[in-house]
Length: 187
Image (cartoon, rainbow, N blue to C red):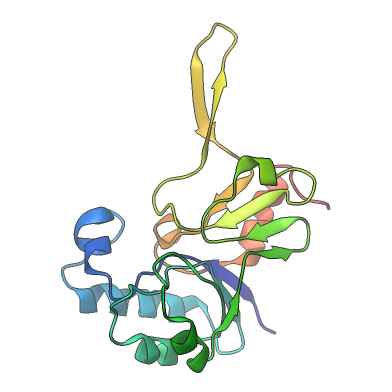
């Protein structure tokens, strides 16, 4: 039986993602070490028949070994392209990846790379599972009873960027559990 997984923002071949921008979540000393760790973590949970929704920024634009990386990853990949996937569509497709735009799953779940505007959530889409924001989450700002500003995570958004889940794809069943805990599911 196959499983469904989600992840975003692997950024294969992107030196600055581990050396400057996200070094705390990606504590590596070389590009090879970074990319090998991502492949190992992916393959530690994803099996051949599994499906992985990759929510964009699979690889940096100038990554030279995308086809090699794709061959080494277990499972079948469905991808919503991200802002760093420019000019890679044909290469991804030749590597067996199925490409999609933002995609609605059952229960009003929208998969996208960049978080959608809050006005898009409500009746048609209840939850936005996304990437793009790496270590950050979409937040709400509310005013408390005595005028204080309260900042908290917006429960309608679930960030599956690699930094959020130890650089490892997470089972969609886990995401569905989070949606139920937040009271945003149909059942």
